Length: 268
Image (tube, rainbow, N blue to C red; front, side, top):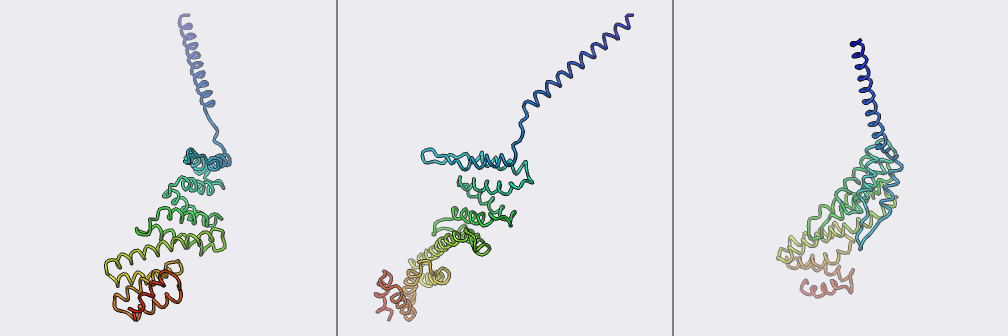
C-alpha cells in the first residue's frame, strides 16, 4: 500500500509540474503574440516616407524636416520587400532626401547607383541631372581646383547626348553653360597669374585656350584683349594689331575696344 501511495504521489507531482510548465509556456506565447507588430506593406511604407518628405517643416528659417525618418521608411522597403516594384523608387527617394538635407556625397552615390542599376527606368535623366547638381555643389570657386566641375559636366554630357528630348536636357544645357563658364574663368585666372608676373608667353597660351575651348561664354572680348597685350609685350606687333582691330570691329563701344584703340598706334 505504501508503494502505491508513493507512485500515486509521484504521478500527481509530475502532472502538477507539467501543468506549471504548460501554463508558463502559454503565458510566454501570449506575451510574445501581444508584443508582435506586423510589418507595414511596401505601399504603406512608401506613402509614409512620401508624406515625411512632402511636409517640409522649418523653424527660424531652418529646415527641420525629419529626413532620417523618411530615409528609414524607404530603406525598410528595400530591406523587407526586395522584389517590390517600389524598390527603385525608394532608392530614388533616399537620394532626394540626402540631397535636400545637403548631404551631397551620399546623394551623389544614390543618384549614380540608381542610374547604373536601373538603366531603363524613366527617371534616369533626372538621376543624372541630380548627380551633376551634387558635383556642382561640391565644386570650388574658379580660382581653385575644378575636378568636381568637370565631373558635373561629364554627367550633363550624358543627359544631353542620351536623352536630348527630355525635360532634363533643357536644364542640363543651362547648367552646362554655367559650368563651362566657370572652367573658362578658371583658365583666365591662370592666364592673369602669369600675366601679372610678366610671363607673357604662358599667359598668351592660357588666353588662346579660353578662345579655343570656351568660346561664346562671355569671356572672348577680355581674352582677346589680354592676348593682344601679351603679343605686344612679346614684340609680335603684327599679331597684336590684328587682334586689336578684331576687337574694334566686333566690340565697338565696349571698354576693351576703347582700350584696344589706345594700343593700336604702338602696335603699328
